[in-house]
Image (cartoon, rainbow, N blue to C red; front, side):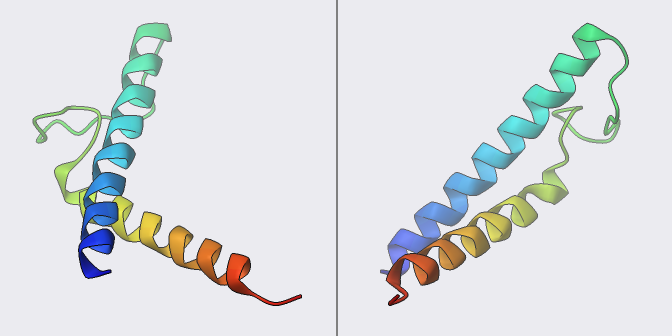
Length: 72
């Protein structure tokens, strides 16, 4: 069970950062990007924000599980 949550945490970190990077890169191609991180290697996403994406994903999973397991 614990390994599942660690895997999900890492997965949400990567997915969130990837989506943020794609969103920033898309807006950079279209016109003006809404944000950039000049001190980051990825330029459109911050490495400091990775844990927040992971925790946010785990919160969504826990809410989803509690709603699914709820008895009507």
